[in-house]
Image (cartoon, rainbow, N blue to C red):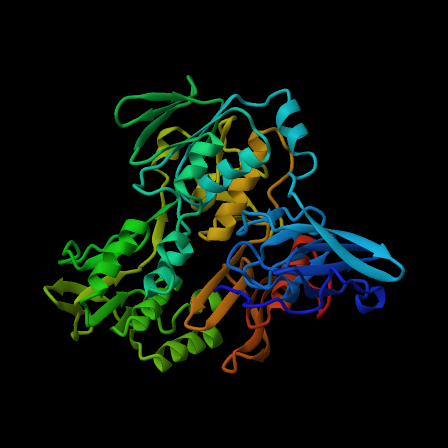
Length: 523
């Protein structure tokens, strides 16, 4: 998704507007020259920041005011109204801010201000008695990148070494199954930062580097080439890897998985000449791949063992909707079935049927990369066990992202979540913890999934529920679903109910899962 304006809209804020035109808790969009500016009022204070989210260009005026912040309606990024700083991933870059003048009952917006660091950043990094001199990050995905970026944003002056076994610098992985695979996103959209960022930020990014061990006693990371890299703090952000097919023909060149940029490019190359594709698995990734291949006008068949797509996570009503949506776009489902073999250009099904396929994409799940943590002797329980500050059972070693199982403050359970935004926010939280902050990781899990023009947002985490209530109509693409256990809302899914989704996130943050707010701002 992207948002843009060919010409400025709304009032000219340099000329000013009446104070009465902007009520307390309200937002409006105007312009200063060619810049779209969001004007927001909190009590007697008025703020002016860029009107477009720095993540995917979402319209902030359609989002939610929470205290002195605004949250993006699309993917729940959060910005400070005072500084323009990006406070919550997935946005990593700030938005501009302007000077506001209140005079003679009018609001005037003046000069654009330079975005400054978050208040207190330098003091936290520079004056902590236990501040490390060298931080090593293992992993080049969402959590690892977000940690490195946050460390520099917090003015950490020590060395940062990022070790990644990928051959590409950190990329926007959600795009790989969506716009980039569909052919609607440019190559330069995919990197999270240009290559120059790492050099300019003093982040020592080593690609194609395999870490084989962690020497806990000497506080060193051991590499495949026998080098040893010492650390004061270590962040394990090794992520997850796709589950590989174990059927005959799984190693054929047209049978692919999707995790890395190289994987995506290989699928795109195959898609250029493919007429028929089979997607194995009806997960979020699998169905996003199906939608992207349909955008390339390839015939797509989806084979999956479940009765309904994504029923385990979203429930039967949303599962039926997702299936119908894909069928409207020409996807053919083969549910309650699995592939037994790939024989040349034919996929054999367990039911006895066969499907022609020039391209096969396996999306049958991922598993966390735990081998390094296990070998190092860290506590493991279906993930790397971490505490509220994301520190593992070994002091000085932290874990974030797909491998981390943490005590969730909202469900009261230890959970592990394989979502991009969660990994980014954990990377940021781990960075603060490594600098001596004692702020527990308290972010509410969030993910989004895009199917053609329909976005599905999901806040919270409900591995199981005993009650599912629906406000609105799923088939009409206007709904909020509440997943409850013992009368308590654990998660909320929505389609085109962005404000309700944001309000649910805020209520969960505040520990009030039984009183999800109605429309309006949250004070």
